[in-house]
Amino acid sequence: METLWDGGRVAIREMQEALPAPRPAYTTVQTMVYRLEKKGAVRRVRKIGNAHIFEAAVSRNAAQRRLLDHVLGLFGGRIHPVMAHWAESGNITEQDLEEAEALLRGLTAKRDKKPARSGSRPSVLEGSRKGEKP
Image 1: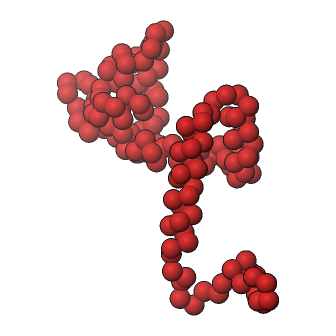
Image 2: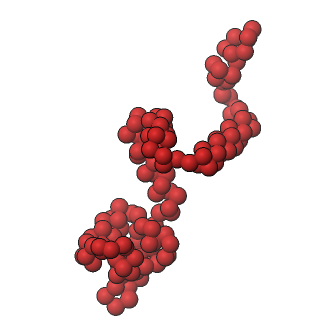
């Protein structure tokens, strides 16, 4: 997929040649591409001679989100075990943490600015200041 995202429209031979050594056989790459096509991740865009030209049908961002959602699902939707592992293994840097914090602050600010939907009731937490009843 990286080859397709970086290269745009690519033939199977070009995908194979872009892989690091030891490269899999052409037919192995072909099988993988056909399976990705069947799943809707890639699509054929044209044929030149005997070579089919493919392009990514899903964006890198969409594929990453889907994969991360799947991984989090394996942990019951909880991110804490994943983050703890990354921190313990040294795979997360101070810059990663700063970027994540900035992103979360931005999302929180966006959420706080959204107007309440008409007809919706405030949550228990919204009306739980001292002296107020939910």
